[in-house]
Each structure stands twice: as C-alpha cells, then as structure tokens.
Length: 212
Image 1 (cartoon, helix red, strand yellow):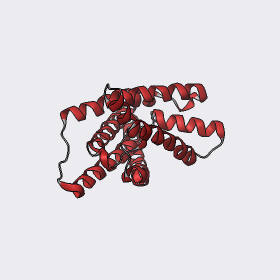
Image 2 (spheres, helix red, strand yellow):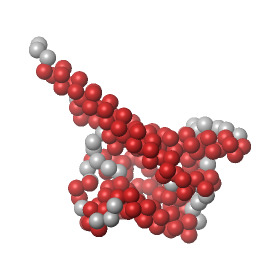
Image 3 (cartoon, one colour):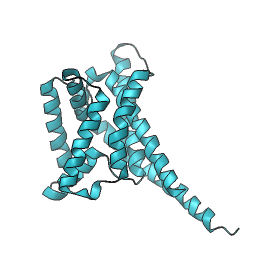
C-alpha cells in the first residue's frame, strides 16, 4: 500500500507536469523553458515529435548520470524519461487547452502552464522515487565538481538555451523568467505533497498496527 501511494504521487505529478509543458508549448512564441526550446528546435529542424526528443535527451542525460554518479538514478528517473515525452505528445494531439484571445490571454495560458509544471514537478519529486533525468544529471555534476546546484543549473540551462536558440528554437521574454516563477511553486508543491504523502503513509502504518 505504501508503494501504491508513492506511485500515485509520481504518476499524478508526471501527468500534471506534462500537461503544463503541453500548455506552454501552445504559446511557445512567448518563451518557454530552455529544455523545451531545444526540444522544439530539434522537432522543427529534424522531425519526429517534441515528446520523442524529450525521451532521447532524457536518455542521454541518464547515460551521463550513469557515468558521473549513479546515486541519483532511481525508478522515478527512468519513468520520468519514458513517460513525459509520450504524455506531452498525447496532450498536444488531444488539444484540450485553455483558449484565451489576444496577448493577455496568451500570457495567462502560459502562466497556467508554468503553474502546472511547478505543481506537478513538486508532486512527482515528493514521491520519493528519485529526481528526473535533468535534475539527476545536474546533481551529479554538482557532486563531482563542487559547484553549487543553483550554479550548475544556470550554466547547464544557459548552454541548452544557446544551443536551442542557434538551432532555431523559440526564445522570448518568458524564457528568462521561467525559473523564477516555476521554482517557488515547485518548492511549495514539494513541501505540501511530502507532508500529504507522509500523512497518508502514517495512516497506513497505523491501520496495520490496529488489533484485529
């Protein structure tokens, strides 16, 4: 039962996170997260799907983490790499997104996407099944180099952003403020979902100890 609760947080979080990415992609001309800039650039230049590139890049980062430090690789890392891409493609295919006219409406749409990404990311991270492939790779680099996690994130995502932009990916204002909006939401979601998960797990343990 404990693993079922944790898996529920992981799967629900990944679905919410993927839907948030999909919403943001619909208004990508306003600017999106650096990793999605790269995914869209590769999709537009080479083909396949945005989700396919998400899977391939996630796989490459997992290989990098295997070489650097395996301790951040868990089942959640692999499920993230394998599920987010197909979920993004599915949501883009279904095309059930909030529709708002004009620029203000598009900004609202993007903010909804960012909020859902923050909530979903915190939720699947709170499951305890491990970091996603990108976070795991950044943590591995930080451990090996001694550079702070925040600085590694800035350096890595800046490199990803430059590569995506050079290939032709969408870079605009929100690309540069994405993290400042998403990170606090991620933290709040992570803390809340961790407490919620621990409360549910505590109830399960209590029920197990009750006399028959």
